Every structure is written in C-alpha cells, then in structure tokens.
Image 1: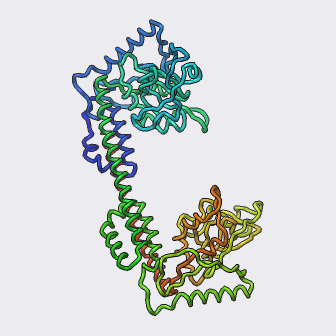
Image 2 (image 1 turned 90 degrees about the vertical axis):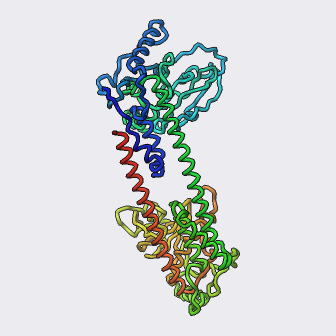
Image 3 (image 1 turned 30 degrees about the vertical axis):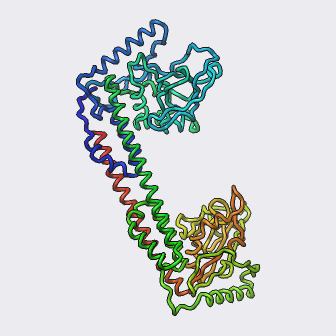
Length: 565
C-alpha cells in the first residue's frame, strides 16, 4: 500500500519549544521525530529519487548473485509477516519490506588469523542514546571467534534481551579494529549489501517507539530473561525509502536531535540555576545574623520569588526554610506580655517529677550540658534539651510469632511500613501482636530510630505497641511545637546514626538534642503561622502539578495530530 503524503509537521515545528517544557517532553519529542522519520512525514521526499521498489530489486539481484557464488545462504521463507497486512500508508516512492530482504541478518564467519587484533564489545559498552558510539576493547581474534556474536564495520546491532532491548541498546558499529569484532551473544545484527542501504536509517527504525513497544509484546522466554525472536527482528514490516532519501532522513533527524540536545542542556542549566538561586536565597534567610541582614535577604527572595518557586524542588526548600525560621523566632513577633519559656520548662520538669513519683514514667539519667552552639534565640526563649521537656520511649519488638494481620491483640507499629507518607501524617494499621511490649498513645510523635529511614516521623493514629525501630517523643503541653521542631532535625538525626550500612540512634541521642523553646503563647502563634504557610506551599505544589498536567495534555494532542496527520 502506498499513499502520496504531504508532510504534516507544521504543528510540531510551531510548538517544538513548548512541547519540550512538558514533563518528559524532550523524550517524547525524540520518539515522535523517529516515528515521523520512518513514516515519511519529515518532508524529505524528492520527485527525482529512484523509487524504493527499484532499490529493492537491486538488493534482491545482488543477494541472488552472492548466493550463486556461495558467499551467503539463500533466505528462508518468511515465518511471521508473510500473511500480515502492512501497518500503514507510505509515501508513493516507498515500499514495505523486511530487514531480511534488504540485507543480511546475523551473518558469521570471517577469514582472520587468530593472532589478529579485533574489537570486542560486551553488552555494557553498547549505548542507549541516539547515535552514541559504542566503546570497545581490543582482543585477539582467536580468543573470541567462538561463543560470541560476530560483526563488522557499519553493521547495525541491537540488544535482544530484557531490559537492554526495552532501553533501546542499539548502534551502528564504526572504527572496529581491522574492521571486525565480536561481542555479547545477546545481539541481533543487520548488515547492508554493497552499500545499497543506509545503516543509520535502519538504526532509526530500530529505535522507534512502535518497533520497541511491539517487540516487548513479542518477546519469548521466562519472566526473568526474555528475548526478541529472530523472526521479529528480521521479518517485521520495514518502511523502505529511496536510498537518497534515507540519507536526507538521517540528516534531518540529526538536526532535530541536536535541537533536542540543546534544549535539554538549556533546561538542565536553567533548572540547576533555579535550584541554586532558591537554595542560596532561602539559606540566606536562615543564616541572617541581624534584623537588618534578614531584611536584605528577604528583599532578595521577594525579587526572585517567581523564579525560585517555578522549580518544584524549591518548594521543599521553602518548607524547610519556614520551619527553620519558626524555630529561630523569626516567623512571628515576640510579644512582651508572654510568660518566659523558662517558667514553662520549670512547669514541665515538675510535671515529669510528679509522674516519676507516681510510677508512671521512669526517672532519666542526668543530661550532659548542651554542647551544640545554636543561633541566638529571642530573650524570652529557653535553650534546653529534648529530654528536659519530653518523655522519650524506645520501642521493643514483640516475638515474631505473635504477629498477625487479622486483628488479634493490639496494633503494632514496628517500622515505617505503618507510617503514612506525610511527615506528620497519621499511622496506619497493617499488623497486630498478642504480646505487646512498649506502647504509644494516640497523637504521640513517632520517630524512626533504625535504618535508612532514621529521623522519619509520623503521628500515632491510635494506641499501639511500638517495635524497636520506632521511638515515642511525648510532651502533651508543647506537643504541636515539638512535632514541628523535630521536622527541622530529621537529617541531623539520621546523621547521628551509628553504623554505615544500618544506622541507628540511641535514647541518649534523642534526649540530648538541643531545643530552642519559645513561650507557650508564642508556640501557638508559630504553629498557626506554620500551618498557614504550609497550606500555601500545598497550593503552590498543586498549581505546579496542574501546569505540568496541562502541558502533558497539550503534548498528547500535538503528538496525536502530528502522528496521524
């Protein structure tokens, strides 16, 4: 089937830069360019070209000659595609065919001395990207002539195993030592005959999303290791343009890919600059040592606010900045009428002493003096240690044979499996134990104290048993402020962990964390302000996601219209 197509790529050219800004936009542009190239929709036709049908006949005659001379074997009858309809319309000078008809598939046997140097290319050296060259090692032919796939200069090779095939590992081999080589057995190889095909055009076809997606469905073998059958590689319907047009297609695709490379580099640089600006500007706020310096830093943030928050990663930086400013006393005004935090600390100490006498909590060991030097805190604040103002309970895992998922016993919070995604989200129930050990109460602050998630927090959504990977930080009078403060220490708590492969922190590590404590009334104002600002951050993230979604939908429409036009 043929059709006279006028190129319908104006929409692509018009919105190229906009499409590139969508999530995965450049990757989708690359795929679209390749697909349009093998559909004859890049405007590369020339009325003076010799039709592809004539080219195909030349290739057939040359193959017949080589068969008669005993240099190649006669092609076997097609297995897969003989009864299949061509998948679509092509320009009138093109024809549908198969790789096995326009070249040699998986050729072998070279007359080379065993002591000759040749190229050796294992799978790890076969590139994924478009037209990236393959790296190579040098070995003696005698070392690799058996048990490996053979290839020569200008052969097109394609990985046939999972996940290398899905990743698009394919390349035109060039500059091989002595023109030949061998490599991984997990390759399909295509070789042109008498320069009657452009191998770079064949490579374009092998990298198209349609060829790769269909190939994934046709793979055979076990789930652990699947392979693209030889029949799919050699007999899939192949769109053959005139030879001169093949070169024009490759050149045009190269130009488009160069534009994509430049846009990608530009985006990466802009994103990196945006991240640097956001990090530096917001860090300046946190590190300002005087009200005057803070004012200057805030003015800089305001001047670049739109640019800073145009980058989703900076929203996370903004959240951390809000928390840091909150615990530095820079988020709300200090009110002269507030009772100093020293009195609050004394009140908490007396309450803890009462609970000790009543046997409800254990007396803790005396704390060391605060060694860490923090920023200067406001006059009415008190610098104290976490153990002075809270009760810390380390978890203890029940026997494993007491766990169940059907509700027998009490809920068990043993690890982050029971944590929700939000830092101060509520825990979930996934298992129970019939022999509970240590307990948390609903609304306690929970913190991971073992493994890579050390420092991660959640709020107990229910009374439960806690395993050894979790600890409780409880101080009812100041719990809301304390929850917020611990969020600013998550990375520091992880860094406290001992053990390189499986870090963990002790109760003493938690007890001695320095805490800048505001007056109780100011704590309420701080928490209220933080909640409001975090809601704004939530809204900002929603806006950024909505914008990304609009760009994605726009890209979908353009790709569909261009691809079917």
